[in-house]
Length: 194
Image (cartoon, rainbow, N blue to C red):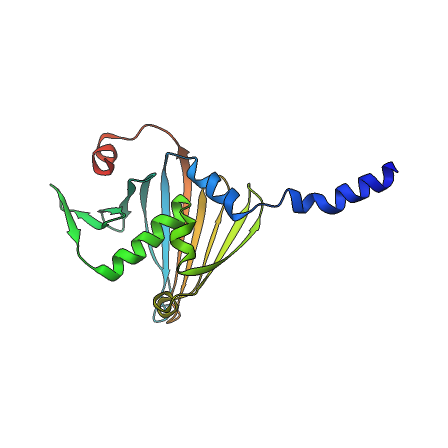
């Protein structure tokens, strides 16, 4: 009898222990803040080499994302649910592009685990475990079908990589490194995100 019990336990345990979309949401939303380094590579069909940028990011749950590009030049962007703002050296200046605001909401959802914002525009396929998962997004809304072929997000405790495959054949790969979770923010980040 013990043999059969062990057999059924082994047979059904992957179903019991499967990593679900709800588990992913809980995992990503437990972090109040994340900060670290990013590298973004933009592969354009018309260029032989990717355009590479890098810098620092700060994500504060329910507040927004501070994207501090350091190379090839300095540029500070603040991404909030209401839209994108750029630092002009003295204050934040809003960008009124409505289409871009929809993409901003998607990007914040990808990083912070707001699956509801994503599910309305994409079909989702999650594979892996809590320590090493991949979320494949296939566009389902008309707008997103015009922009993306697919989006792939990889991570563990946090999002570690986002790959955007665009309709016209261009691709963007964003990698996050040296991620610190729930650590104090510097003054500029604190001021921008509150």
